[in-house]
Image (tube, rainbow, N blue to C red; front, side, top):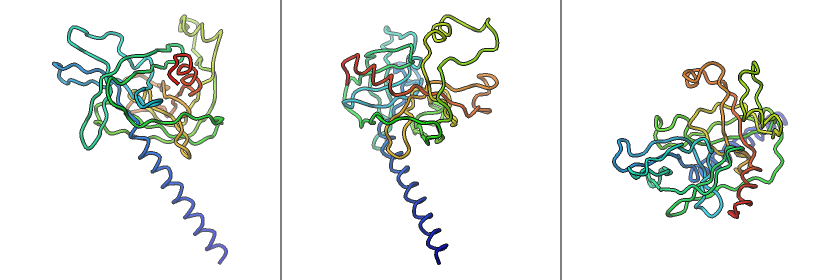
Length: 250
């Protein structure tokens, strides 16, 4: 009888947790946008470059600095924009770049119209082994405007500088990081190029602990979709909070 009660309680606990995560994902997806460029006379008019998520007053979008295009065709009225699905329709809002932190690979955009639901930023300590999830657009336009969620754990908290096989592969940026490294989260979870800028969040609270910014490629960039490494890196949310405060956007 005791054994039966134990299994019943275990089943209820597992169901409650699954429902809780499902609720968090449902809520989180409302704050997730695809980041790209929009050009009225181009086909397609919208091109996806990565993922972003909404914070602050509902008009601020966070993504990676490397997601933003290096050049904008101003003559053809090209702009950085976000795309999302609402009421079964794909919506587009043009944006303006507010601030870029290349060192920590963070960019903040402002919506030029409207507001979207926000995600809360975590104040909790992040530990190795902690369960996480992230939601974004893993392969850009291939899957359409449908945010996808991946789940895993924080497998390590390690310096941002990755080891290189020989000194020839060291560049100025790596040398600066060697002198002043900062910790990033290594995730045991599969991400793809379009996931850049995705929020990494606590599966129990839905609060953001980091921002996906790179994927470890074990072979070549061409095989990343067919042979993903399952190792993803994320920038701790501390650096976004610092950037928001310094920019008076908090």
